[in-house]
Length: 424
Image (tube, rainbow, N blue to C red; front, side, top):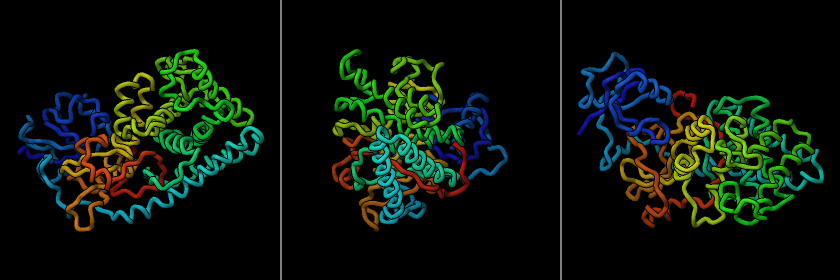
């Protein structure tokens, strides 16, 4: 067995063989385990925001560690190894359910307010403006109070609200805007645009099953495609009647524009796009892929991130897509995973300070407290995620116990992670 040493990122130097405990979407290297051959690679590692890496002395050209606070030598995790139960940071499932109950209540209330907004947008745009601004300002107040936030997967018990898509998109857009350094009025405008981006569908309801990520499956010029694309202009017109800032309308106008020029309605290219419009475009597409009308064809959030990288990467500004992956973690809430000790789990929460170390509902039939337990990877350094899984890859009894969501809904709360928070 090759033993590894966990070292501070500042101790990495040329000649070291390192192991990265992060997913392949996060870093620019071809593999997770490799020998450092240049200072450029070291700078790339530091740019990932990692605090430490694993160093394997037996495979390195470096005879000894540089001076510094290296941690004791530990075995590199292997698939067959069981993790030490005493070292796992566990929470009871009941405690977790209690923790997110307020998030679910807040989500339901925001969805209810959004439905009021939809009903008043055309007959009373001034009233709709008040409702919109109050909703976004309340979310911003919660975000501003937190150094880091925890994004939760909500339970299947919440009602299937008509406004859940717009609320999901608003929450994720605000968090992504914050991750990219936005604040003040620009962030507020982004939140308003995200909340109102589909309000025009009240004027021209689209055909069932059509949305921005599959609209190109319809022939250009076909009646249902033309009708669908009209909602962008209608949403812009409604926000203008609401007398919202012009930037809100500009962001909405770009929420279906792709960087490669294949979006609509103006076929803009990357040089023409505003970052806020691309944030909304990406988050809107992600939520549509997470929540298809045909749930039998649904992918997990982890699979959707991989799809965005493999099939849609050229359609988004690179810095926006990269920031989104880092914010959500490679395994966003709702992803099914296998741990490096062979247990299966469902990602329930991601802390913005530790996006690569989510909280996971683990199926462990041998646990004394029951087959389900909540593990916090940020406080369990010996545990890691081996891979993401499609539901079809899990044993039936495990799948039934974990109850993966057919609808992916998110809400957030103030983070309280272990150790100092760090910037994404």
